[in-house]
Image 1 (cartoon, one colour):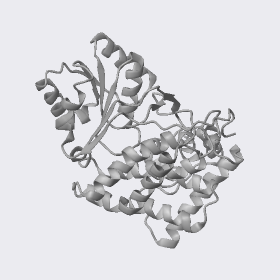
Image 2 (cartoon, helix red, strand yellow):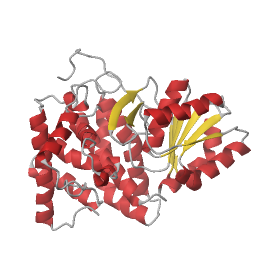
Image 3 (cartoon, one colour):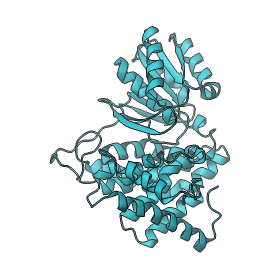
Image 4 (spheres, one colour):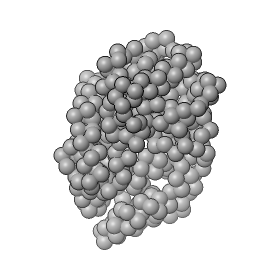
Length: 379
């Protein structure tokens, strides 16, 4: 039931500062100087080789004493405890997250545990995690564990598009898949409290709509620019939509079925599925959201066409689970309908059976679109 406590206040929240542009990371010392002098730099070995060495050198020239924490790859409670102990032992005074969504979500949790500020420096535009006051945590095996929420958003989000463009275009496409859910879910959750505990503001509504507008206007063009490693206006616009607009839109607008079904998909023990990126799984789950919203075929086609044009999965087979049994899909539906899941923000009747049929219906819709358009499917 949406809004059982009858909340009437509206609430909007955001990071204190957002900076985006080519070579922006070179100015990191200027933006971070007010936070302290002894940061914990959290990143994995791959990202360290791409951007971490340069960032650490720039910070050390500016007289920062940097402790490097090597991220192990999963945003799990064990990883957060391990890296938090390192930060506490080294007496760090703020946290820097350099990397993708799971690195960022772990850094936010560590900062909260230690009572420190966190600066987020995404190296991809693959999720809307950077701006939010929350984390998605997983078990070490990759199964969804829980959401974790914080009293403060990141103090700064700094996006260097000359670094982001070096990532494979699949990452940008995944971010598009995640961001495409933003406006649809916010509309479905419009009568429910958002992640700050208040109702959506008009600003949040406008941001969600603008996010969707940019994705349809520039999505495919941006992915093609990314493939050419070209920082174009279209690329910059989609990076902003994936990171800032989607982040503000989902947090202050609310989530609904798409992200709940994404979480439910972790119930299927399938290596190919779990290797898919967050936004790739959200893309298919967004088609499920459209089914639950009773979207007409013309609207379904509009979303599925954009997904297909940037290589996002639109069927269960695209996710690697084309042979999933009804029993497995019912487990997905059950997990999507777990207590406190975001699917309950929807102002309509929801049951596990309804969600199970929405998943089956979304798969059929994706298949039908392939047949009618002659598309080859997931790239």
